[in-house]
Image (cartoon, rainbow, N blue to C red; front, side, top):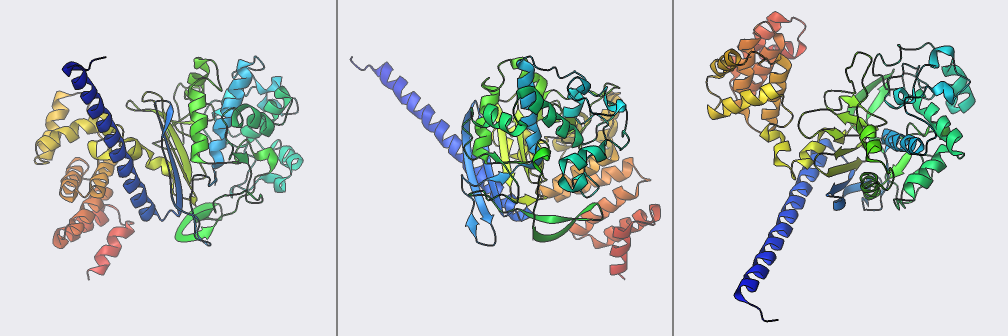
Length: 494
């Protein structure tokens, strides 16, 4: 066929468009690499693995740093990491698979499937077990050691003697007993041990060849070392800033709560299969899996201000923009599924205390710029409005701007903590002058708070205004004589 000028132009434009798309993807990928490497440097993360799933395919898969510090072994795509409590998300999928098979309903009472339980437990539902709202006593102690020395029969008998923590559905409280019971239910209804059921119905269909159940006692090829700067002293987790080897043993009966070893690529395969109907055939099942459980009073609750809800084995990030289903594990690994954006991000590390859930949104920001903290992502609706107006006015006359917004919008209000947190975000973005004006605004809005003067003084000192810093530290100490930060600074200036 004869090539016309029109055809040539079409071909040329197609090539240019494709080239631009490739270059854009490369730039995004390179920017993410730089971000990850800097985050690892800041947080002293030895090794990290990343997978990005976009539009139903693996968009990016990268490995960074050292899998093993002692022997200087680099992290590669085959390196496996413990995903700890992210295992619960697999349990949620397993329960939904059994529901699709007609073997249970998530709102069933557990007494339909487990007979040897105290009377107070009989009204607890499967949904409440999955969402950590059951009120059951925990089968681990304050140091997170499994009761009964890791012996299943002893653990079960001991936990049944303990009182309920609260009425089922009344509160959210992270609970391992519920997941032990879920393991018993899966085993009973499937006719095979829960580990085998999950292997056969999730690992194998997704071709997750590197994924298995295991712990520090198992010899696992390519498994990353486990490190921590956090140690448990008298039931409290303390970060001493030093790198320690971390060992974890998970009895087989406990492995619905934690126990899967995997790679970011394998988890990527699993997420693609889950959202493409390969694991759960009914779209409503996936929606139910990701829907935050409501407490008896209609509210939702979760771990913290980020993962502020909990669904069926899946912690959730409930917010107006870019909500997510977000399993986290061992303070070292996390994955976010952004259902509205057709994007998922997996970050696995070998450092307990790295808490990657707090920086996954920033990675997502390379695909959706409005998710960048520097663009105001994560701020409340009212704080975004204030931010917008302050930027227009170059952060001048902040109190007047705040007052004008307050007069025009009856529902406009901001807490001291919201403004203070934003100020520290600005410092992290190297916008110290803007941060100073935000902290100054906070002192005008909350003049009886010691904390706002402390933050303002800290920023003044950061900018070299030593005299004004002393004045505001004194004010902070007057309002709160127990403010050690202010006292130590003032004593150092004598």
